[in-house]
Each structure stands twice: as C-alpha cells, then as structure tokens.
Amino acid sequence: MTDYTSQGKTRPKNPVDLSNCRSHQSYYTCLSRSATASGTVIVQSFSPHLIICGASGYLRQEFHELELLDEISKLRYEGKLPDCVEGNFRNPLIRSYQQWKGADYVPPLIHPALQWSVTDPLPLLPVVTDAPWQIIDKIKKKEVDTETPVESNTTNIQSGFVAAKGSMPVKLGKKRKFEEDNDLSVSAKKTKTAQIIITSNDSSPSGLIWDGDNYSCAYDALFTVLYEIWVTDTKVWTK
Image (tube, rainbow, N blue to C red):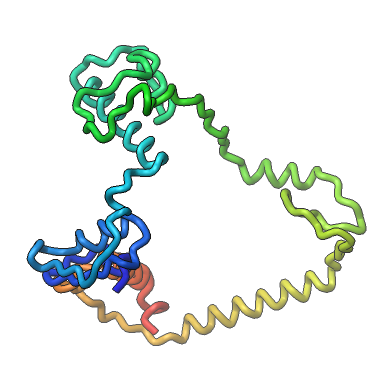
C-alpha cells in the first residue's frame, strides 16, 4: 500500500517501507497511520536525510508567515493590535504588521529552528496585487457578441483561440447546423425515453454503513457523494 492509499486510515499494525518515500510528507503520512508506536514496523533501512537535512526555502517562508499570522491573531484577540495593522488578505496584513514591528522582529514564542536573523532574514513582503474580478451578466455578454462584426467567410473564433498557421476557417452552413440540431434532439428524446422506462425501486437504504476497520476518508466521501446523487432521483439512478 502506498502512502497515498493509506491516507486517512488508522492501522493497529502498520508495517511501512520508507525506502521509496520521496519527501518528509510521505514519511509523515506512512508513520502517522499507526494507532500505536508498538504496532509500527519499519521493514528495512531508510535514508534519514529527508527529515534531518532542513526544510526548503519555500516551506520555511510558509512557517515564518504562519508564525506572524499567529502573533497577529493573538494581539487582535487581546485588543493590543493597532489600527495601522490591517488587511483583508494575507499578504497586505503581514506586510502592515512588518511595517509596524520592523522586518527584524521575531515573535517570542517561535521555535528556535524557525527564528530568522541577520544571516537568515525575513525581508518585508513584496506588494502582491490581487487580480481584479467582476460578475459578467450573461444578457450583456450576448448583446456584445451580437454587436461584434463577423466576416461572412469566417466563424466567430473564441477569445484566446489561436488558429494554426495556414489553416482555413470552415463556415458552418445552415444545413449542417440543422442536421446537428436534429441529432441532438433525437439523442435527447432517446435519453428521455430510456429514463422513463427504467423500473422504479422505492426501497431505500437507511444510510451508509461506516467501516470501523478501515476508516477510509476517501472511501466514505466517494460513497457519500454517490448516495446523495442516488437519493435525488431514485427512479433514474436505481438501474
């Protein structure tokens, strides 16, 4: 069983082979499945460099920012956070806190392995501007598409589509469009008919039987989704 497959399980007896794990996350997943230390068996030797060589730069930066967010939450709860420290998103909030405390400030409760210093600094976070977003009204979008001029010998190419060099656009004629619409309508009628003739079975299980031996999150989630789909229309989904 791989570390991915074991995710979410609890195993009283957990033999693990760490020699094929590629990261410390895999080590954690394999070993944390064990219910007890006595039930954990490492079947062969493994390389400890994944857990003693130090965290990567990206991971250390993530931990640094989480420590600052923890400090900000603590001060806000205690009512000691000044009004100058504000931000609706992570980046501006931490940046404003650094501007108040200084980039060299290290929270007192941070673990020594994560503390930054002159040799391992935590610079002021750069300004990250969030991409603008807007709600597009479908009616207005149709009006814009209608007003857009289209040449008679080309089709309306979708935004962002780049045609291959030397390719020729194919005009969709009325006859072909009519045939395609006909095929779709026939297909829809067949599907609808097939749904109607399905035998109905109103017998419904009382619920899911949770497996106390495996405790698989993925298994339970999958069948919960399938069960919810089935109960929405038992006549269609029973077959």
